[in-house]
Length: 328
Ligand code: PMV
Image 1 (cartoon, rainbow, N blue to C red):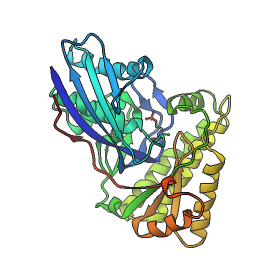
Image 2: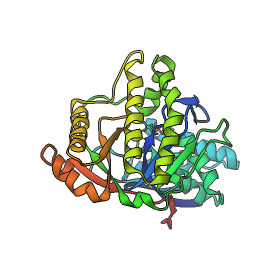
Image 3: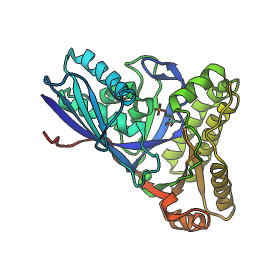
Image 4: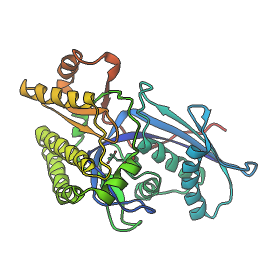
């Protein structure tokens, strides 16, 4: 038996990955930049064992159905193929999220799986190689190999598409991200389906591509200068542009719910009151607010008039992937 385990933290993109150039290799249309967070993470163990007759996938102790297991098997197949290995595996994952609010993330999940496989098979991968492997599971997972700020350079091949740390002089430790959980009961469109529909059909998609590399340059400059407003402004603008592309997709869609808009409005109001903070959103209605640690208490107080304590979850900058001892 080959067993391994890893813990990976989720990341939130400040400059978004939106659209694939190669569906199979998961090469993105554009480079992206994220902040890895401490509050949500996944621990995954993998056991490749000769006695197994099929792959199985347990999430938080519960065996997952064939559809969920197939996604995991697809990633395991890649590893098996690369390593010339013919063993089925049991995958045991635990998501650590502060509430059961649907914040489980493919980034932490697939990064942890890649790390667990690498550990089990003693692959001795560099961080770059591990990032490339995680990318094949879920694009954004390649950024969760690194702590703090990470940039995923889109590259143009499997070899050249991976994430790396953005030097920051630990500035991320002065920042926080406040999650505002809004539930709208809408049926989800996965990031995978959403970006595909947008790339294939949205007449706004070219506008997205026209701006994103410039946004990335501004974000990196802001990190270098430790300029919070500059980073916040480009984060918010880039997120809005990403979400704008969905409105021109065929058929059109949006991840925004009425409460998402309410949070955006409150963030603007907070700024008018002299509280610097900026929002971003991903493939769902929850809003994430970037704020300096020193202003977090004031922001929470301001939002607490509109949202319950349970709806407001704080995250700080988190570490990169970690290997942990596996139980046998
Ligand atoms: O890696 P995926 O397939 O979960 O896509 C992530 C897409 C966004 O969260 C919307 C943006 C990003 O860069 O994380």
